[in-house]
Image 1 (cartoon, rainbow, N blue to C red):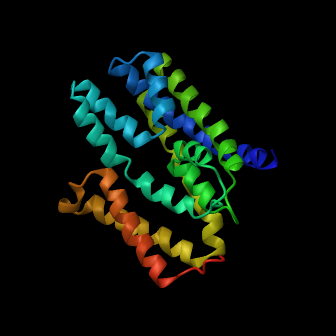
Image 2 (image 1 turned 30 degrees about the horizontal axis):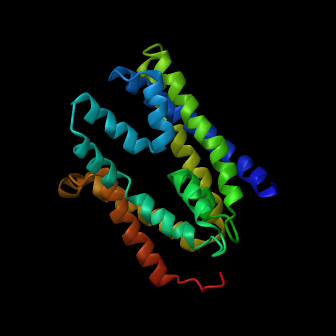
Image 3 (image 1 turned 45 degrees about the vertical axis):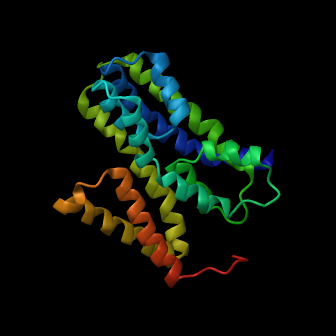
Amino acid sequence: MNEWKKGVRDGLPICFGYFAVSFAFGIQAGDVGLTPFQAVLMSVTNLTSAGQLASLGTIAAAASYLEMAFLQFVINMRYFLMSCALSQKIKQSVKPIHRFIMAYGVTDEIFGVSVVRPGELSPWYSYGLMSVAVPGWALGTLVGVMSGNILPAVVINALGIAIYGMFIAVVLPAARKDRAVLGVAVAAMILSCLFYYTPVLKRISSGMQVILITLAVAGTAAWLFPRKEED
């Protein structure tokens, strides 16, 4: 129960950030014809801003299920890497059912908070994170899709910036304590800019870009700054 409370406490900033971002998603979902129930169901079952926003384009274009499945597979492939990383922080005695539930809640933000947490990762800590993050994502979607076009575009764009502020809040404390973390963050930003501004690399999908950058930066960091097993 104590671990769950810590998860709830650490998950509150994620909840607020999710509400702002999913609010913008809900408005766009309503624009393509999704009902409030459909939009909220998508948010609860997916928990991925990039995947859900990309799916709206395929829904509007009346794409096939196969096209949508392949799109989601590519965009969300990065969660394989995150799950593998978090699995190293879980005791071997943790039952598969707990691992499956924890895997459901692996998002960029929940991963960021979990991976920098010292020591082993308790399933109940993850449940605490999810118990506030998931409702925040779903509630923001519901309010957004029901609000329609009430708010001006400039306000919606401003709300979308909140998620980046939350990422900074997650990375900065760890970067101050460990120069390796700071180096990884800076290298990831440099590579992201390289992919964004290089004409050839820019053609690669955003999901695949994340995977390539993660493998390059994390692989290099693991080689240059190896950690002992007991760490």
